[in-house]
Each structure stands twice: as structure tokens, then as C-alpha cells.
Length: 344
Image (tube, rainbow, N blue to C red; front, side, top):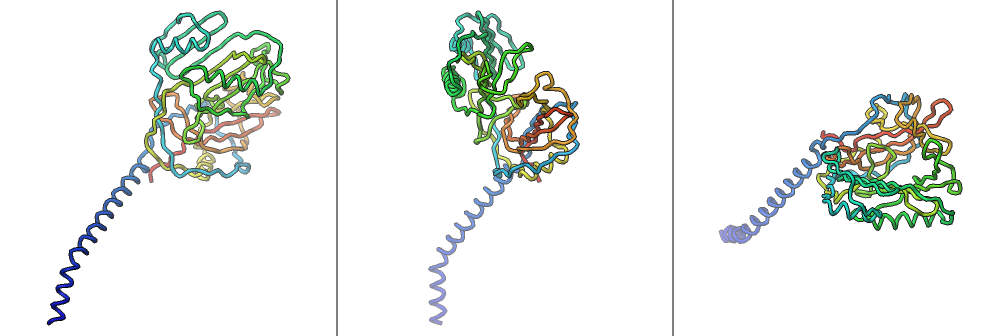
């Protein structure tokens, strides 16, 4: 009886701590399970709508060769973003114009364009337009003796961007997109070297999650600037936003899954360009549909698509770039594919 009594007293002493310990385990388990369910729901909900503007007259390639693709490190999840327009007042617009050397007042303010209110200036040899998310500057340059290297021109381009208020400053130059141009009888033409160029074009990327932003106009950079060989800036085109706000997180298709979907014809053909002898697009044929029998993809990687309709969120997509032949002409094809996985 003494033994049973001692045992009962011992159980009574340790019962309360054990109960508390079990209660703590149950509580932590419930919190963890609730977090896990909530997290899964966040990642499994349908992604917002994303409109990819494809050429509806362009047919899918007869066959796509993926054998030249390199394997990419693809994250399992990525967020989408919402672009916030710069709230342009008359004073802000005039401040930006002054940075381009424009001292005149606007000659035309257009209300309710597709990009909101648009300000327009013309002063001597300068044309400038500025809307809620776009900026376009053009200038008829002067001819002066050539004395500036490509590296110096690049420095001048970067310095020019830095002096324009509200332009992004954390941009990355895309060296492989640098173009050598000249004035031709039909407008701007490409040449094959820096020495033969009259105009140098530099392209700059804006990145989200370390991925470049692209648009439905394949090959068009976030910011582009052209300089004469004498260092004079004659053209600048840029998107214009105050911020990019992160929204929800979704699961990402693997590169293998994206490759299979493109093979099945689910990719959007956003561009087929015939190229000149310098590997640049023949402008007259930029939007012409091409009968592509065989497309050889050389790159398939992630980027963020800035939609035409800024009411949509900025989402990651796969960008497939490759080449094809049409007769004796070489061409370049660009394919877009949404990267978010559909819910199971």
C-alpha cells in the first residue's frame, strides 16, 4: 500500500508539468499546421491575368530544337509586382523638361491618352514627350569631328541618365545590345563596327528579383539612349515609375516544364525578325509573319513582363530566343510563356 501511495503522490506531482508540456506541444503544432496551410493556399491560388501580345497572324514553328539550351538555375517561387506610376504634376513635368535643356512651356497637353496625361514640348531641334509611365526625347544632332571612344560615350550616356530627375538610377547596361548605327537614305541603318558608326545606341535593364524587365515589344529595353560619335545625346526612351510593389508569391514552372509547354505550342510568338548582314532587325519586316519551319532555341530564361495594361501585375515569364532561316535570310524568333504554375 505504501508503494501505491508513493506512486500516486509522484504522479500527482509530475502530472501538472506533463500536462503543461503536452499543451505547449499541441499549441505549437496547431500554429505550425495553420501556417503551413496558409502558406500553401498563398502559393496555390490562381495567378492574376497576364496578357501577352502575340502576332495573331504568326503561326507556330513547324519544329523547335531545344538541343542548344543550357540548363538554368530556376527558383521554386517568385512574387509578382504592381507598378506605381509617377504622379506627374505640371511642375514636375516642367522640371524634367528643364533637365533636357527645354525652357519653353508645353505646346500641347493631351488628357486621357492610353498612358494618362501626356505633356509635349518642341523647342528648336528638340522634341520631348512625357506621360505617366513613358519618356521620349529626340534631338537633331550636330556634326562635329570624332574624338570620343566607345568607353567614353558609355560614360556620357550613364552621366546623362543620372542628371534626369525621376529616371531609374539602378539600371544595368546590356553590352550585347549595343548597336552601331548610321543615317541612311531610309532612316537609321546598322553598320558592323564602332569605327563605321555615326551613332552609338546603349540599352539598359531594370531588374526585379535580379531578373530583367521585358515588354511585349521583344528586344525593346527599359531605357535606350543614342549618342553621336561626338558625345551628344540625340535620343532617350525610358519607362517611368515611382515604385514596384511586391504582391503575392507563386510557384514557378521548371525549365523542363516550360520547354515541354513551348513544344506543345503553348508559347506566344511575340516576334519573328529577319536580320540584316550585321545581325540587326530589318525594320521594314519587323512585324511581318514568317513561315518558320525550324526554330533553334539558344536561350530559355526567366524575366519579368511589364504588361501594356498597367492594371495587370508584373509577372515572371519564360523568354525563349532562337534563330531560324527563311530562304537565304537569317531570322530571330522570340517566344513568351507565363512562368507561374497553375494550381493542382
